Image 1 (cartoon, one colour):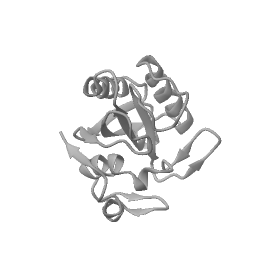
Image 2 (cartoon, helix red, strand yellow):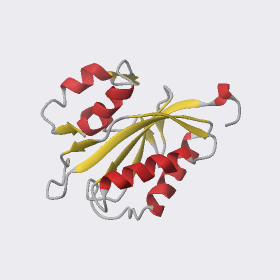
Image 3 (cartoon, rainbow, N blue to C red):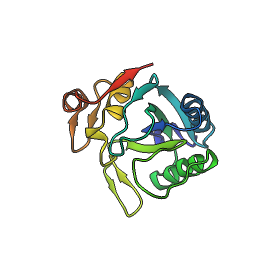
Image 4 (tube, one colour):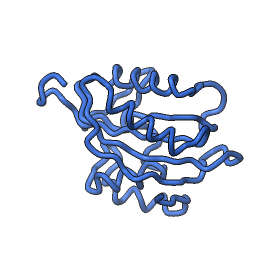
Length: 165
């Protein structure tokens, strides 16, 4: 990493429901740890979660990692997409469909970012138990910019099936 004061705390959501999902998430965490100017500080447990949107597919395995990074948000996003590609992810067709590995930049410091290719905080993180539960595990007092306290957001997802592995 460049200078410690230049590093930003970011949160990355990981998900998979194809090709040995637990192994895919472990490989995803390892790939995050190898990113330049980036250090994985914490990772949640893995969670088995029900699909959202397209229901006719296998359950997902999800987790969240907190990283400290010197990469700019767009660079980090590009690197996450490259990791997905190397793990066989094809970004075509319906959103919410089955995938080998999904890496989402959920939060980047306290920044709010809206560009053609990146929205931070992730636009649906506040309504998805598969993100909120693992995020809460590693950062229970987190406040989501523009959305509020993580603890309060969890209540709105009470009906979604989430099982800690």
